[in-house]
Amino acid sequence: TQLLEQSPQFLSIQEGENLTVYCNSSSVFSSLQWYRQEPGEGPVLLVTVVTGGEVKKLKRLTFQFGDARKDSSLHITAAQTGDTGLYLCAGAPGGTSYGKLTFGQGTILTVHP
Amino acid sequence: DTAVSQTPKYLVTQMGNDKSIKCEQNLGHDTMYWYKQDSKKFLKIMFSYNNKELIINETVPNRFSPKSPDKAHLNLHINSLELGDSAVYFCASSQDSGGLDTQYFGPGTRLTVL
Image (cartoon, rainbow over all chains, first blue to last red):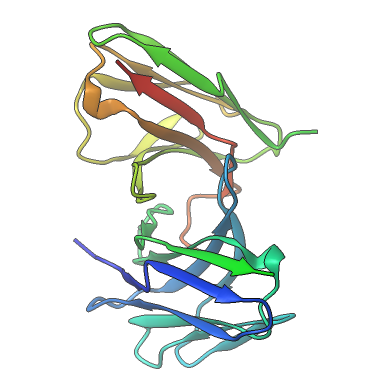
């Protein structure tokens, strides 16, 4: 069974600060996705990283896939109150995985004005 | 237009009852999923169907039975509800069943078993 350890579980910061969320595993994933979920809604995909060492940027969000494809990070620069939400990483094992994503435990981010 | 819709949004019921949750997607996708999110926000896949065929069946009690009448619908029927079934259930869909395909989630159904 592949597991994803996500940290920290909770993050409370002031607007304008930077933050990093980590997603680690002892298993190799063929791809890793980051989702954001707002209260009362379903998760929404932010990015998919596929290649080891890959870095993707989405405005103030920077996503990195580890060289060994076992870990990933999400860095937010100059956080805004609109970034508040639950952030989830999810890994796909590859092969005939049939979209079977393994999710991390999630990071609840609160950005205070 | 809602891409993935679920009904009902909230479901409160007594232990031992049988209930169903319905899901519909209008994206033309081939694959649909059911996930369970517990009180700690942990999201875990339960089932997946591709073109009405079951392709993922995780370790879920057989009180849970998914049914896909067509590609656009995936319903979840739960028999003999237990307290531990209380959670938010999410339906999702993707174009195909590969790990790279974007999964689009519905708004969730909050099930509370009393």
